[in-house]
Image: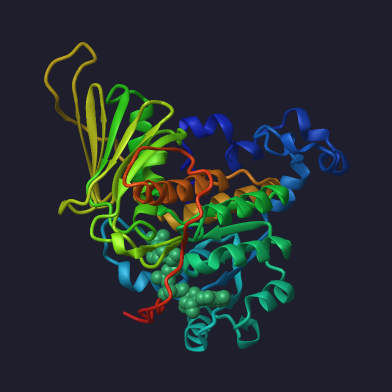
Length: 420
Ligand SMILES: NC(=O)c1ccc[n+]([C@@H]2O[C@H](COP(=O)([O-])OP(=O)(O)OC[C@H]3O[C@@H](n4cnc5c(N)ncnc54)[C@H](O)[C@@H]3O)[C@@H](O)[C@H]2O)c1
C-alpha cells in the first residue's frame, strides 16, 4: 500500500524532517557511533536535524513494529463499519484497521475489559486467545509492544498512558480528548518527555489531506493574513469540540492560545463543584498570540468551519467533505470564487501511524502532532470550563490551577457495530 507521508505543513517542515528526507540525508552525522548518539543531551534529542546514522536507518527500514491496542471497541477496532461511505473519511479509520493496513506494523495483542468485545476484536484481526488481555498491565509486561494505541474513554486514559510509558513503550497513539483534567495532561506530558516517547492524539482532521491543503493555502497567503476562524456546530466539549480545537490550532499554525471565554448552553447543571458529570455543550471563543480569534457556535449548520483572512476565506464543509475558497486581490476589490487546491483524500489514521513509525525509525520522539498539541487541546477544554465557572468571563490561558475533572458516573460503553 502506498501511504502519503507528506502531511506536514511548511511550518512543520521547518521543525521536523520527514522520514524520506532523513533516509536520503548523508551529511554530518553519518559517521556518528551509537554511543555518541546515546550521549547526546536532551535538547539534541529534539533537534530535527539529528541523525542516528544511515546504517541504523537502513536497518530500521525493514523493521516491523509490534503494536498493541487497549480499548478494542468502536474507535479501537470496529468504527469502519459505521463510517464507511462517509465522504469526509478515508478508510481505514479505526486504530486496529490502521495497523492491519500499515506494512510497517504488526498488531500483536489487544486488551479490553469487556470479554465479548475483546474476543470479537481477536477474531476480526487474527489476534490469538493467548494475546488477548482483560488486564492491560499484563499485556504491557508480557507482550512488550513498541507502539500502543489507547482507545478507551478519557477518564481511563491518563492512568493507562502513564503505565504504558512506565512499561517502556516507545510510541503512543492515544484517542482524543487526551485525558480528564489539566493536571493529568501535565503528568502525561512530563512522563512522555522524560522518556522521549513519541505521541500522537487521534484528532484525525489534522491528518486529513483536505485540511492539510487548507492550511497550506492559508500559510501561502491565499486569503491574506488569517484573522478569524468560525466553527459552526461546536458539539459536546470533550468528544466533539476536542476535534474542533485541534483543527483550529492546526489552521492557525499551532499558535499559543492567550485568552478564552465560554458558556455551556443548556449544560450548566453538568458542572457540579469540581466535577464535569457529563458531556457539556460548549460555545465561546479564544484568541491566539498571533491575533487569530476562533469562535465556537452552536448553530444548526452542521460540521462546517471557515477560516477568514484579510483577502478571502476558505470553508471546509461537513468536517472536510469538501472545501471552497473566495479571495480578492491584495490591492482590494470584491471577493470572488477561487479554485481550492487539489488533494487526494487518504486515511488520516494511517498518516498518524506512519508518523509514529517515522519517529521509531529515527529513534526520536518528533511527530507532526505531539504531546504539546494534545496538552494545549486539554487546556482549551478546561479553559472553556473554567471561564464558564467564572460566569463566562475572559480567562487568561492556560487555565492555571484548574481543579475541574471530567467524570461521568453513569457512562456505559456502546456495543460496537461488529459487522456491516
Ligand atoms: N478520532 C475519532 O474520530 C473518534 C471517533 C470515535 C471515538 N473516538 C474516541 O475514541 C475513544 C473511544 O471511543 P469509543 O466510541 O470506541 O468508546 P467505547 O466506550 O465504545 O470503547 C472504549 C472501550 O475501552 C474499554 N476499556 C475501558 N477501560 C479499559 C481498561 N482499563 N482496559 C482495557 N479496556 C478498557 C471498554 O470496555 C470499551 O470497550 C473516545 O475517547 C472517543 O472520544 C474518536
